[in-house]
Image (cartoon, rainbow, N blue to C red; front, top):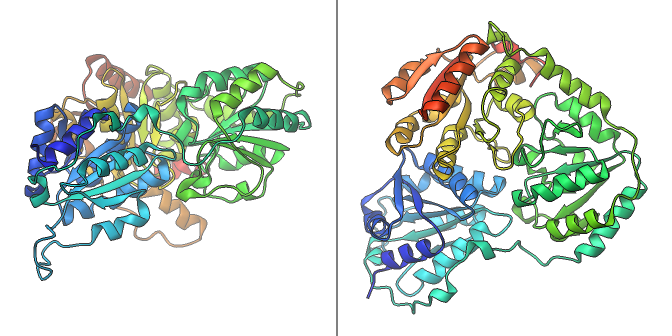
Length: 539
């Protein structure tokens, strides 16, 4: 008879989980060893929050729930950040933490926190496992983590249960299959939805398609074919960048509070019909979505289970797209949003790839890298002023090549996400764009990247300040207070973790160093000094 730990390991293995992330504690050692025995790698990280973020991005790219393992007490306490990011940014995550054995007396309060009660409101499922329920519990947690909208699930295990006998009948035919995961709710008729959308578009003079986080990247070819055949303009939210080619003439920009947001919102307000596939206002920091004429095309509810109350079509995106492609466009439309496209293009064209001093030209930093690295490069960003620039101006051309924390907008995401992405796609370059404030939060994960053979490139835009908040203070006419810090030597930190580090002030040096690291498949940290006032007018 196998133990509960071994039963859990079997269920994860059958679900296609080949790697977990986390930090060990004495209470989960039996589980980690059971994973080792079955061939599931345990990736030791330097902080549980980083492990959870890395796991979720890894799972997103592998199309199976990412798995993070922690001890009880402080280990489990550090899961709130990845849980919050997972539920708002739709990244599939199963967290397994230790807990105090039920047989221990209630007076034993050392490290005792009611984590299931704490985390139930921000997870899709929270439960303890035992010998009678382990398989069913893990299967349900896996199922709900990847069911759209994807999000976090949470399971606890005690030391006693970890080595207890697994008493359930093992029916492998009921094992979780990530490829059979379905969206929450019942779908409507895609033919009727396609006809209704076509009818609405037939009466529109300035329609705009808006693509959001709820679109499955597998639909990218259909979306591109439909947009091209019908001659429709399109915008995207940051979490779905790359679903369309952002160098195409019908691309208006990135919607949702990124750089030059006012310019992009001009296009939305000029439109007399916005057809939104998978759009979720979780990525938006304003309320225009409640005021403009939007037709919502959804496969799953929005974040936190919310569903729009009007003009909502709940049906398969793939089937709707195929129907509309077959039907053909109801009319042709005159060119629209040309002013928005021109203003956005001007910001790009005013930047220079031969810029000798990048400190006052942050868009040139984005351009120098975007024009140097391969199109398949995965870019992750941390949160800060640089996020706004990369979110708007990085020219994503392929699906699943851009990751940021946007629904939550949590700092500390960039490096951890890059680690998960590189482990999931080892043959693809991965670049993390972070500020010096975010870099100081989890730069120790560079050691993790070296140790596990996942070379990542980290661009540090250094301004010795939480510059986004600094500019917010200026806008509110408040004094500069509580946002600045002493310079952090990113190069020395990189070298301390076994990674090459350098500073670059000109675009040529920056691009050359990054391309050299990509060619050698090596980790690299490049610090680029940026004057804080260089972001003025861009964020």
